[in-house]
Amino acid sequence: MASVGATEAAADSAQGEFAPPPLVKSPTLKRDLRFNVADGASYGVMVGGGETYLQAFVLAIGLGEVFVGLVASLPVLIGSLLQLISPMAVRHLKSHKQWVIFCAGLQALCFVPLIAAAVYGHISEVAVLAVASIYWAAGLGTSPAWNTWQGTLVPREIRAKFFAKRSRISQAATLLGFLVGGFALQYGKNTGDPAQVLMIFCWLFGISCVCRILSTVCLWAQSEPTPIPSNMRFLTLSEQWRKFSRGSSGRLLVSAVGMQVGVHVAGPFFSPYMLKELKWDYTQFAIVLGVSYVAKIACLPAWGRVAHRMGAHRLLWIGAIGIVPLAGGWVVSANYYWLLVLQVMAGAAWGAYELALVLLFFETIPESERTSLLTVYNVANSAALAAGSLIGAGILKGVGVSIVGYLWVFAASTLIRALALLLLRRVPMTVVLSDNVPVRTLTIRAASETLDSPILSGLPDQVNAAPEDK
View (cartoon, one colour):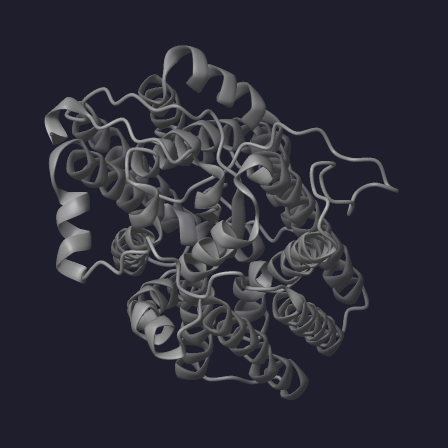
């Protein structure tokens, strides 16, 4: 149930790329917005060049293919559960900004043991899971608090355009990060010395660590006009669950979880399949990821127009139907060019699905409650991811770690996705006002289902409650 944001604002010129919108007159706000964009850019490099290649690193260091699939999912679930302390931490610190800075710094430190592992050529499975779990807890923990903080920092009249520009810059940095990472790893592989590949990983993780430190400094440099907004509601877990489990939101949540389970039966296993079974180069791997990521971003303005004209509910159906056959396409052929075409289709389908999903979830929720509900949204998404990956791991272990075993995993994923469409039929029509949502990319997956966090300040504060929720 990852979210995704439309980026309809055109890219700025090279000279004006970091310039604040023309409506901004306050010197303090101008400085804040520049540091805000710099934070997004450095964060994007960290995601593209660091976290994206964790699975590839685990493979290179000699851990098993089934474990590699699980390391992309179980830490996300553990991290989403650890983030439940975020509201309590914010209340204790009496500041959203201070909590975000702490989490960002902690996330930077998570790269240190990975750098050490690359240098020494060894790390245990337990250590990988622990480091990845802390990384995800810190990353997910920042999302609700950062959303609230940014809602007080960026004036309402410029939020949509500013966050659209920020998202585009951050996405470009992410793309640059994993493309450079892929070509660098291939250079190391071409030397024929496995130690050189590990040294490239060391550099990638080191650069990612530095970028997250720079991001943390940029966060620290921004002001906090209102540490705890007066209209902010800290919902309890039971209140959050009731908000999401009743009426149209509840049916949409069940449908989204069902689809995510099906998707992640296969999702975490595409990377080991490409790198180990198909024996692709790192360059091929990076290009496949890049093609789907670019396709998703390129299609978002068009999907935004579809949402505006036809409604987010119909856009959700378009995306869901497009997602169903994607894993099955990997069963049809392993030809590289066929899979490139398939990845373009995947990027387009996921763009439609994720945009519609976040619009339907969050625009119909009062602005003061959105950031609290983002926590349960993350937990539900992470639980679905972990459940799907465990099913996929069970199939792969049962059939055997081979090309045939992976094809069974992809086929099972396609079947469960198709069954999830039956759940989508129970989701009623809901009216929303927006046609775009800017996002922060948390990670990129080989199957195009990027994990993103919506920038909720980019949504309007009006609420159109569905009739069945009244």
